[in-house]
Image 1: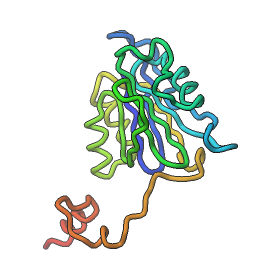
Image 2 (image 1 turned 30 degrees about the vertical axis):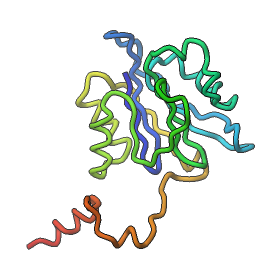
Image 3 (image 1 turned 90 degrees about the horizontal axis):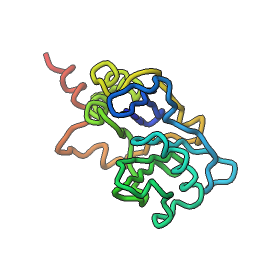
Image 4 (image 1 turned 180 degrees about the horizontal axis):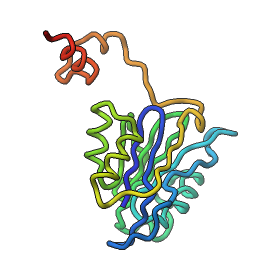
Length: 187
C-alpha cells in the first residue's frame, strides 16, 4: 500500500512495499525524478500508487506521449493504479479508470490513507506531516519517508495566486487561516 501527499512545495511518500499482507520492504522509492519530455532540459516528479512494478513502464509511457491507446501491456488490466506527474505546468493524475490527464491543485494525495492525509493538509499540516500522521495511524503505510522539493525539480511551486475578489468574497467554507483568525479574535 502507499500514501503519497503533495502540498504546494513538496511531494512526499512512505517507503512501505506490500505484497498482499506481507511487507516486502520499507525503503521503496515511490517518487521518481526524471526528464521532462515536454520541456527540453526540464525535469518532472512522478509518483505511482498500486503495483510498484508499473512505475517504470508508466514513466516510459508518459515520456512517449501518454497516449491512452498505448498503455503498456499488463497496465491495461484493472489492477488499480494511479500515476501522478508534477511538471512546470502543474499536477496531473492518470489512472486505470481514466488514462487521460486530469489536472489537480495542491493539496493532493493518493493511496491508502488518502482521506486522513488530505484532512491533515486542509487543516494546515505539510505533506510530510500528513505522511507521518498516516504512517503512525495506519498499517498500510510506513517505512522511510521520501521528500522531493517541487521547486528544486521543476523551478516552480504548485501555489496559485487567487484573484483579489476571491480572497475578499465570503465563501460557504472559510479558509483554515480565516477560521483560525476568527477564533483567536474571540474574547
